[in-house]
Length: 315
Image 1 (cartoon, rainbow, N blue to C red):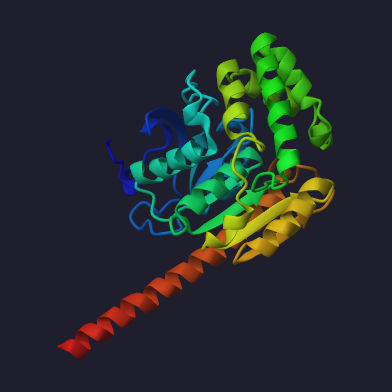
Image 2 (image 1 turned 60 degrees about the vertical axis):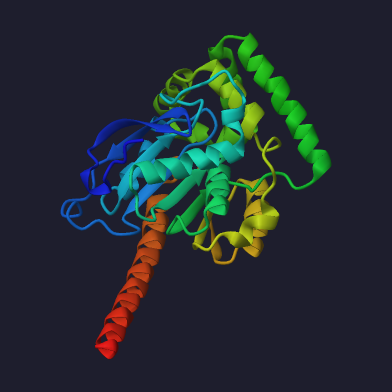
């Protein structure tokens, strides 16, 4: 595989072969002056939710790219990434390895990892698989799977039925049903123009990719990771909407299981905090990541100074 230097990354679309799957990423320009001095924590890898794409996370990039290089990855089965018919590459473990391979292929040095909903579950899986790979995690309306085995089996059955339905009806009919779910009701305040853009973006996906995504890395299909969360060494910011009661409870649970985590509840919004309150969301996330980056750089300076002192002592 060709490795792309982070310093040499150009703004625009890039396609990368990751674990046998061709994935698309959108790279947003680094802030002026960063190109000659990219360090750990200067980049943010962004993961969308189910039926999303790089386009659906553009608002996240808009709030962060003045301070960080932003890479919006389209997960398997979504957007311009490959939608294979074989089910194996859609397993959450496989998706986590694909994310890690993208980090290696783009030569990203300990990027921040931000994931929304399904993308948040994928972010957790990638961080558990390689705990030292990321500078921080930001999880928006996310969970680590379904711990209760009975509920998990019920969700698997429901997702399989929905996957079959996606393949048997026009995509537009499924998208309209999906956008009408109660969890997205608060997005109505975004207005007709924004909802139409969201609908058009979802319609650009392929039915095979969406169906197999549910079968392979749905919340029930993935192995629950609550018992492995303490492996994650990076600080974690959990962002949840005040109206998203289910995920407020999940965030409280995640915070108790993670080594270094805090929760921010954003008032008057629902599941998609980044869409419903972009300015508040961007400020929260940028300040969190900047604090993590400053801490990492201070630690790196101490390590380097210690190494220099040791060298002088040996001399």
